[in-house]
Structures are given as structure tokens and as C-alpha cells.
Length: 227
Image 1 (cartoon, helix red, strand yellow):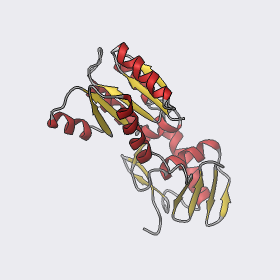
Image 2 (cartoon, one colour):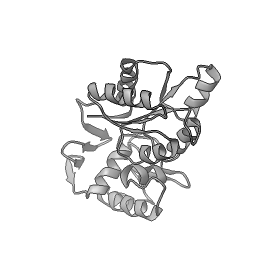
Image 3 (tube, rainbow, N blue to C red):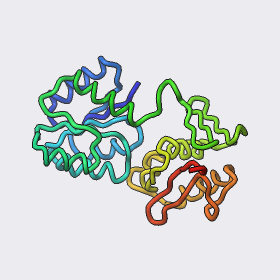
């Protein structure tokens, strides 16, 4: 059941969307202001966020930028602004999609299905493959060239998060938010230590990387060594 967060200050709209999305098989949580919405959005608990722009404590565009600074959770903007320049600015700021008010629950549900398809692994294929590295999300097993690797819980979660985004540089604060659920950061050493353990099990090192590459001052990415 997809976990959806709705950040909307209008009580009538908020409650109506929550009820109608729940009827369509979603688990829904709501917030009526930007700051508590941002905190929940980056917790790592949600599959997508529906974010209103006209919030009482902070403009939704600012909230979007705060979410995107630490999390890759899909965000659909709900807006009454239909000017092309404003929409382009929101998409450039990190929005995955937008709906223009007024909109129906069916319309929103269709947009949610689309962003969830793009952001997650295929439900019929819950295996991630990067080179000869295979990660089974259901059994939580990892194999390298057919040999099973013994990974601890956070090692698996970290490797799987990177494997779901192959080739993309992931900032450490995003990893802290998504894997450790520390939305406002924490010690980089936590990530560095876990990456060191994973690299050792992959038969590589930071000095001689194969799968996991560090982009100094930016983040890390997982790549196919053959590419």
C-alpha cells in the first residue's frame, strides 16, 4: 500500500483528498502547514508527497526546495498557479509533477501512479542488477557474480538505495534522511563507515573503486564497473 503525505492547509480539501485516496488503496497522512510537512516528507516513510503552494507558514516552493535538499521522495505540486513560467520554475526546483486546482481525486491518483512507477522498481521485478551485482528486495539477499554476500541491515538498505538510482550522485544528507531517517543531517562518518564495510564485501576500496564511487564534496554513486 503506497504511503502518501498530503500537505494542504484547506481542511475541506485535505480531508476530502485523504478519504478519496484511501478509498483507492493509498495510506494517507496529512499536514496543514509547511514546516511539519517538510519534516514528515523527508522522514523516509512516504512513497510520494502532494504539496500545496499556498501554505500559512511558508510558501510551498520554499518547502519543495527544503525537501529536495535532503530527499528524493517524489513530490506532486498542487497549485492554482497555471502560468507556464511558474510551473517551469517548480519543475526546475525539483517537483516531479503538478496538478492545477481544481482537480479530481481520480486525476491526482493517476498522477501518483505515474510518479510511483518512475520512482520505484517494477513491482513484477523486485530485483536490482548493476553489473554482476544482484539485489533482491523481497528476500533481502545480495549476490556478486553468483556468490551470496552477508550484509547487515543498514548495509543492505544503503546499497539498495544506491542501486535503485544507478549512476546518480547521491548526497550524503539524502542518504541520512532516506536510510537512517535523520532528516536534518548527522555525522558523515556513519555513511563512510558503512560504505567501507560494503566496499570490503564487494572486493574493492575507496582508493580502488569498482561499484561505489565517491564524488568528493558531493556524494556517492553506484555504477556498473563495465561501463
